[in-house]
Amino acid sequence: MKATRRSSTPFLNELIGFGLLIILWAVLSLFFPVYIIPSPIEVFKATPEFLNAQFFSAMGITLLRIVVGFAISFFIGTGLATLFAGTKLSEQLSAMVQAFQVIPAVTVGVILVIIFGVGSAPPIILITLMTLPLVFMNTLQALKFPDPKLLEYLDSIKADRKLRFSALMKPQIIKVTRTNLILGFSMASKIAVTGEFIGSQDGLGYLLNKARLVFAMKEVFFYIFFFIVLTVLFQGLVELIYATSLRKYTYGD
Image (cartoon, rainbow, N blue to C red; front, side):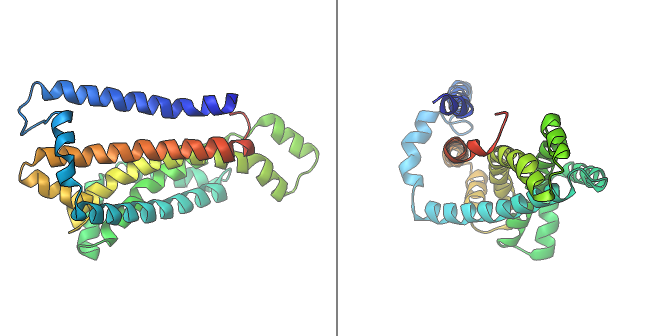
């Protein structure tokens, strides 16, 4: 019972933050005309007209790109970090990844469109490239400082690689996976919109860009609100799965 209550705290904080964001939005709308910042109530009233076949088709396309792009970066990032954790090469890889992180997503997106043309490839590859450093660095840091007492015990019993992985690395990987999924999905959503802005003729990012060009701000804020709700719900799902199924495989949490 205690573990469930403690695990729900991050999601509760997310809900509180979501509520505060709505309040801030409502306050800002008082100081701007509706064609710049419409109020939450105005956007909610207009929501039924945005929930059409075009929206649901675009939503499916965007979500598929997010899942595919982030899944690739998640498995590659986790795998590379696990493989090189504790080695000298990890320092060089970390430096390279940190250098790549400073490159704007828009710049990478433009290059991808030039190479692959307009379509699904640029957004998916962009999501993979921009979320990979997050997964890699978080996982590498989690594996960098193992429990010294546990490490000493494993050394004393001359544990083999399999036991060391199960005792030292597996719990840390499971623990950091929660963080990687929450932060990575949020980042992947934003990158997906950026990629569809630049190099796609479908998806929610494309619809958002179309609405922006004609100053349909109620529709723009609807899409923004949708992505926020989606991220909050995904975090809740991750926290639930972690609390009910994965926490028992970790320690010190």
